Amino acid sequence: QVQLVESGGGSVQAGGSLRLSCTVSKYTVTSYYMGWFRQAPGKEREGVAAISAGLASIMYADSVKGRFTVSRDDAKNTLYLQMNSLEPEDTGLYYCAARTVPWSSNRLSPLQYTDWGQGTQVTVSS
Image 1 (cartoon, rainbow, N blue to C red):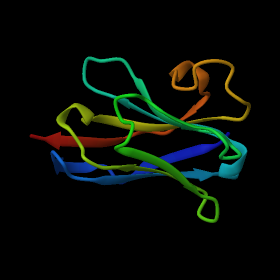
Image 2: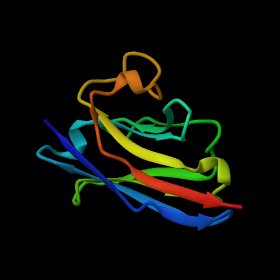
Image 3: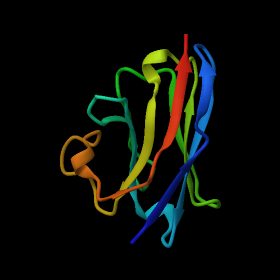
């Protein structure tokens, strides 16, 4: 089973930036369709970005378009989420997730993914 470990979270002021990392173990990151999710206290987990195994398809939630960028470093077996112009509404526990086959429907739905990391906390203050 693939192992996913997120890092890079922290506390920043509104307007700041953070870069999250998701290191993939046991298998190569190029084998997976992956996503970034977040969950704020009392709210459902929501999809932020999704990227296909071949990098041909990248999708973002409307709430982060133009501010967040997902990328991948195959040599480091790592997925990244660059977050700029952060807002207090971006606060939450951020997870990366993976699946080995193409998405069957909404690629930003948590139900599409079989493997999850433990999450890294992002806190944005106003």
